[in-house]
Image (tube, rainbow, N blue to C red; front, side):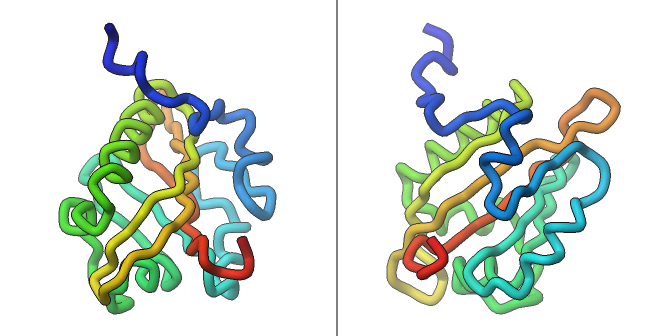
Length: 151
């Protein structure tokens, strides 16, 4: 059986559905971060994030730092924040991430976190690949605290 055969595709979606999948009508057509992403900063419980696939460098908005219980401004390192995901959520996220990159699809996942400031919380992760010159170069998306009234 192929490794992707067991992947629950109910959380995976084609890029042409980005507009329907991202809150506030966001789409990602490659290139720069869409201007609508900058408009998310005032919404406290919705965070934006980006991962450069050349070096796995992360960029987070303040709401993502809050979700992970980390001080704003610390440089998030992917390998250091992965342990904040509950084991089952982390495994599913990693499979969906690999599938998204390989097959140029977006994904949505509700993941359980154990943030640095203690406790547990659930977040909704929405991601889409950015394609430049025929290659997936970044992932962009939203992370939202599922306990917020915005949900």
